[in-house]
Image 1 (cartoon, one colour):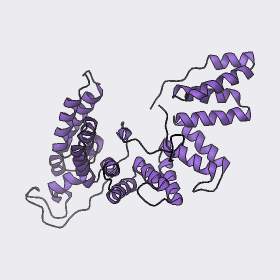
Image 2 (cartoon, helix red, strand yellow):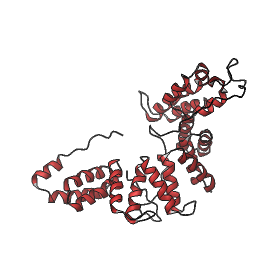
Image 3 (cartoon, helix red, strand yellow):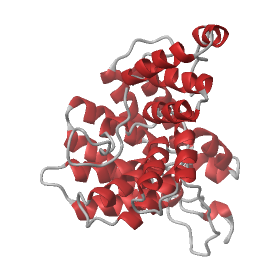
Image 4 (cartoon, one colour):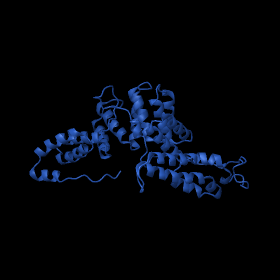
Length: 334
C-alpha cells in the first residue's frame, strides 16, 4: 500500500494526513515511565492499615492503580515485586493483561482462535474495567471499527486522562475528525501525547502545522515536529523530512541531508522512498543497487518502479542481469 504523507490541496500532491485506521499500535509503542515519591500523608481507607509512614506501601491503592494504568505486563510485574502492598493493589491490572491478550487473539485470529470482533471487544472491555488504559484504547479501536464512534471517544478520553499517550493521540485525532471539528481540544491532546514521546502524535502535529488545517500554518514549527518524529523512528516523518530538505520548505535546502533521510525512510520500508531512492541511484549509475530498491518499491505497490527496473535491465550486462533476475527479497522482520 502506498504511503502518501505530504500535505497538499489536490489528489496529485504527495501530501496527506495520517489515516486514523492506522493508529492502532501493532506491538511496540513507546509509553511513558513513572516514578513515585514516598508520601508523608496518612494512607486512604483503601491502603494497608499497618503501613509505616514514608514507606512505599503507604501510597493509596486508588492513586497507585491510576499511575500504573498505562503500564505493560513486564512493567506491572516489576512494580508488583516492590512490596506486598503494591502486589495486592496491582492485581486487577495484572488480570487486565490476560483479557488484553485474549482480546488481541480474537481480534487478529491468532493463538488458535478464529477472528471475532465481538469477543475481542468483550475481552478488551473486561480489561478496561480493571483499569488498564491499553485495554481501553483497544476497546475504543473496536468501537471505532464498528462505527460506534461516541463509545470509542469515551474510552479514548478515559485512557488519555490517565496519561496513556496512544489514547491521547487517538482522542486528538477524534476531535480533528469530528463534525464540527474541535481544533483546540485536538491540539491539546495531540501535544500531550507528543510530549509523552508518541511519534505518531508528533507527526500528526507536524501535518496540522504544515497544512494549516486546524491551526495557523507554521512551516518552521512543522519541520521541528517532523524531525522529532523521524528521529523517533517514524518512517512517514523520515520521508517528509527528506522532502523538506529537498525543496527547502521549512528547512534550508540541502541535497545531502535530503538523500540521507530518503535512504533512511527507504531502509525502513517506505515504498515511495524506495522508489525515489532507486531513481536517484539509477541516475548515478549504481544500477544493481537501484534494482534492489525498485524491486522493493514495486512489491510495496509502486507500479512505476517496475517500468524503471525494466529499463535498467536493458542496460545491464548479461552477468549483472542474471544477478538482478535471481534477487529475492528477504521476509519482512517487522
